[in-house]
Length: 610
Image (cartoon, rainbow, N blue to C red; front, side, top):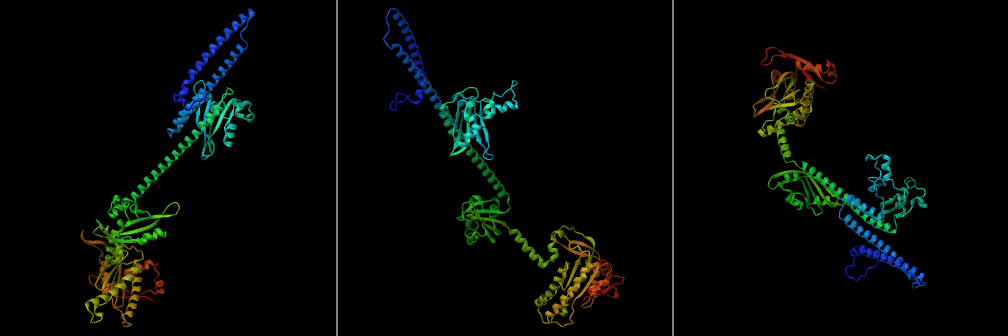
């Protein structure tokens, strides 16, 4: 059937499809009329022959030829109608498939139409799994009832049967990329060895590949297990056109699914990053190649006293005006990380001290795109450090380092065994005459400095400075020591050497010995004394008083220990005082003394070093 392209009388494809049924009806009427005329003429020819007459020659033959031509025209019209119906269905399927990215349901509906138009019994769309490379069923039609048993359930063999397709045909189509049509598979030489065709008695089979950009992604397979010659070139062309649309639709759907998955992953990562950046206590800022802020977390907003709305997109120097441009340039141009401290005035907040770690920001190709700044607000820590540094000047360092532990001690105290030492560093009268008070203080501090260093080396706690004297504690809550008495004596002997070195540095006579040291071990009460608003950590009791009296009764250059301190040392070394003597520590007993405030006499020992 042909169409005049200049005919505007409505003879479009749609009009042709609508006019085909009426044309077929007309042909049927003509053939019926022709049959009646032919029958009448044959009857007339019979009567005429009885009278020795006849119809014109070839009239009946011409009528037969006309009937044959009408039959041919009728078959052509049926073929045209079928083809136009298929084309219209294909156009509708194309519009339906391309109207949505949820392609599975649409492909199922389209496959239902394909089965109707081709006369197939079953239809399948199989796609290649990207990971395994195996063909997997995506759509199956015409299998709903074929494997069902009487009860309505399926057995395993029946389910396998209704989903079984010719792997020989599939492999051929997938391998060659060419469609395959057989109108009698059981006798087709190409398929004669197929176990599936032999087992399930497949008759008509049609299979076309799904090809997208020269890549075979699957196949469309239809068959009829009972009828031969179901499929023709017309059905092959129809299925090829359907396969082309299906390949594009499936690829679009897969692409859409991948994009959706990537978008979900990007969204998830963005949410994660936002949560991470939001929960980081450090400020985080990223910049682009032009040093404009691209990311700015909540901590940065709090530290810099600037909202993200007023920071993102702005030059980094507007957000951090004290940041050196050279540092950013080196990070971006030379791929150099840097750590720096930044101190300056933050508008709306005041002075601040920031520690900044700056790192180049690179893309996947290792190209520097900007910089990442992670910074911490150390303003309070720096202020505390300055306060502690100042405190160390006025408070014994042992107490400064354990200030929290001291603070947790309640007013009152704890009784414990300690060794208390009093060190008299120098008499005021021994200081050179003619010095101003300031010069005297500076010289006295040199003596106190030497003593302090020796005390710290022995882990002693300085309780207090008392002019030219120092009170030292061993085995307090702040410096627990099982060998406290021995440690105190070792400190005193080391201090004796340090004082000798100081005398030489000050160019004093070689026999100069200004110091006096007294040590005693015993029970004392240690804790905080004072009030809730002002308190001091100290030790009180007879042990402290006796140590002070021993120092007062010592001569210049003497180191005096009590009998209790010696017993503690003897306990520490397991009674081996001779071993200590071999190491250069000797104890010589002196006459017992009666100190102020005590009725009984105290046995004392002078200590000598190597």
